[in-house]
Length: 204
Ligand SMILES: CC(C)(COP(=O)(O)OP(=O)(O)OC[C@H]1O[C@@H](n2cnc3c(N)ncnc32)[C@H](O)[C@@H]1OP(=O)(O)O)[C@@H](O)C(=O)NCCC(=O)NCCS
Image (cartoon, rainbow, N blue to C red; front, side, top):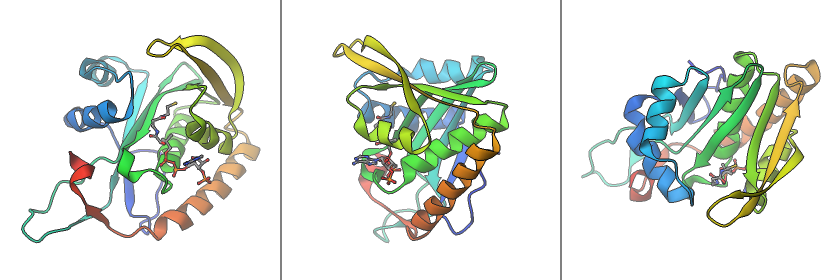
């Protein structure tokens, strides 16, 4: 069970990523990233990396848009993961499928990763982000991460720099209080979302 407790009134859930989730995760991975991980990277992470923690985000329920459609499995809307070494959680990936962005779900995924990392003993959160990725950087800044280094030409596809961002002392009372305040705002935002209509773009 993931560490983050999501109120029942919030129509989304977060679960540990399982082997059976990999094809759906890979479909999103290929849509979202210009340098997608290969399937075997997720297989290795789940099978062989004891320091790896991966989560997936789903709606609690879906409503079919046409009565002729069978009631579908709950689709994966996003996912993320981190490596724990030993009190540092390095977020290795986070993604929300394109149709579901801008509704607070990236924030929900990020919060779930942070709380999971804290539950496993992390006190420092780090990650790399493309210098041009303003959306992700803005999310990370909201959760207190700051740029601590720049890795020139880190991304091979376009030679873009990576920014290393981090936040320390996440187990401190101060940080926990900030998290609680952000969480309360996020629950209020997500509670109004209602059941997720299933469009083809959510599963294809
Ligand atoms: C980064 C990502 C996970 C954010 O998810 P999202 O669902 O779109 O974001 P949310 O709706 O939860 O918004 C959370 C915060 O992100 C930032 N954000 C979201 N959309 C934004 C936009 N269009 N412009 C600027 N900031 C934005 C804001 O800080 C926002 O907080 P706010 O709502 O209080 O302003 C998502 O855009 C994504 O999957 N991007 C592609 C993959 C990627 O870049 N991953 C990160 C690799 S380091």
